[in-house]
Length: 46
Image 1 (spheres, rainbow, N blue to C red):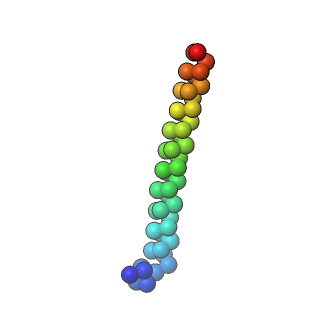
Image 2: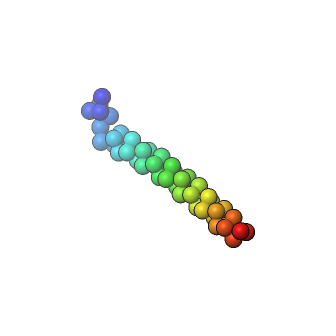
Image 3: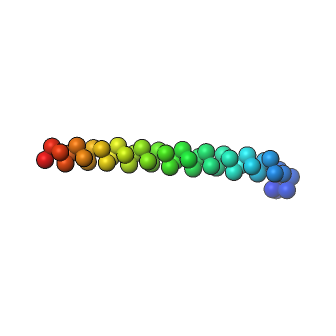
């Protein structure tokens, strides 16, 4: 299956996977940052 795609197709698949992985990690990073910010604000109120 992979032999008839060739190198360009393989590169494209790897690029798409990298973009998806980057998007997921960025999403979790932002989620963690927001959660951390909320926890800090709660700590200041107490």
